[in-house]
Length: 87
Image 1 (tube, helix red, strand yellow):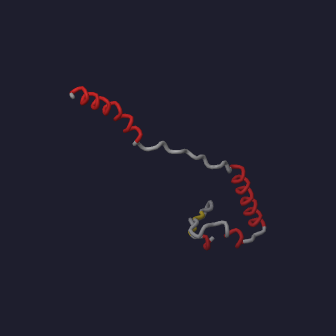
Image 2 (cartoon, rainbow, N blue to C red; image 1 turned 120 degrees about the vertical axis):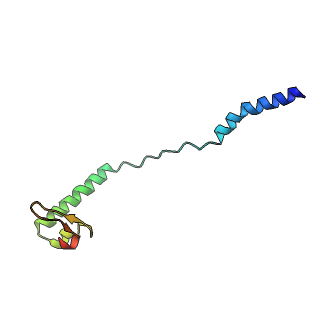
Image 3 (cartoon, rainbow, N blue to C red; image 1 turned 180 degrees about the vertical axis):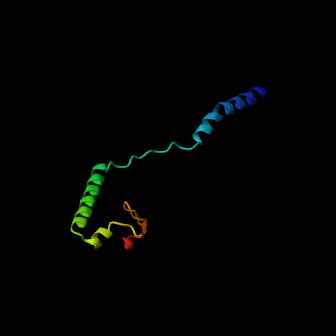
C-alpha cells in the first residue's frame, strides 16, 4: 500500500510542472502592420505641394483649411496666435 501511495505521489509531482506550464499565458502573436511608407510619403508630398500652391495663389480659405481649429502659430518677430480662425 505504501508503494502505491509513493508511486502516485511521485507521478503527481512529476506531472505538476507539465500541467502548470500548460495553464500559463499563451505567447502573444506579433502581427506586423503593412508597410505604407511609400504611400504616406506620397500623401505628405502632395499635401505640401497643395499648401504651397494655395499660399502662392494667396487663397486664404484654402491655406486655413490645413490648420486644426486649436492650432497655434508663431512667426519670427511676432507673438503666438492661437486658433486656426485667427490666422
